[in-house]
Every structure is written in C-alpha cells, then in structure tokens.
Amino acid sequence: MKKLRANINTWFEKLDKQWRELPVQQQYNYLLYCFLGYLILTVAVILKVWYDTGKSNHSLVIEHIENPVVKKKESAISIQDSLLKIIKNKSHERK
Image (cartoon, rainbow, N blue to C red; front, side):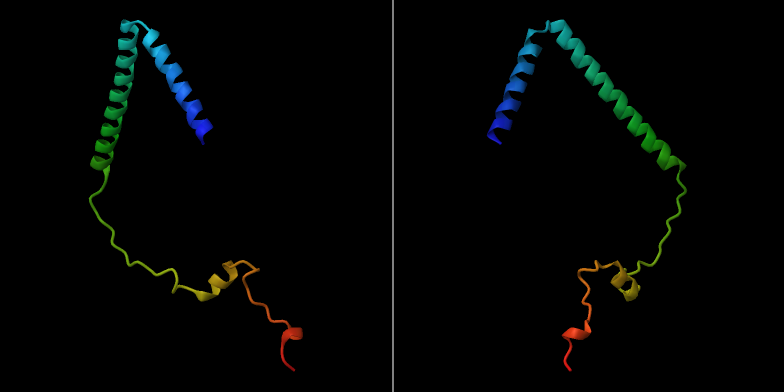
C-alpha cells in the first residue's frame, strides 16, 4: 500500500511539474476548455431533465406491495443450493 501511495505521489508530482512548465496562456486555454466542456455537459443534463419532466404524464400508479417471502415456499426450496438441502438417507435412519 505504501508503494502504491508513493507511485501515485510521484505521478502527481510529475503532472504538477509538467503543468507548471506550460506557458500561462496555455494553462488558461486548458482551464477554459475544461470549464466549457463542464458547462455544456451541465446544460445538456438540465435540458434532458426538463424535457423528461415536461413529457411525463402526471398520473401516479399506486399498487399493493407483495411480500416476496410469503408468496410461495415451494419455489424457495428449488432455488436453494443442493448442498444446503437435508437429504434423508435410509442407511442413516433408525431401525
């Protein structure tokens, strides 16, 4: 774990050094492009949510919630692993 942390720290230091070596105008351009990409993505998500909420019908369907445990006990036995089932064997019974 310490080796992984050391590798990540050296990688971040190398990235930071490369960033600082870039001219200020190029750093500004990279930040501007990242911000514009984030802004476009945010606007797209907001428009999608706005479109979906405007398109939806305003009816709410209320149904009874069924308990899955009570439904069928027969199907639960067939789902279980065969190693968990207790199998009676005639040789293990009393005479």
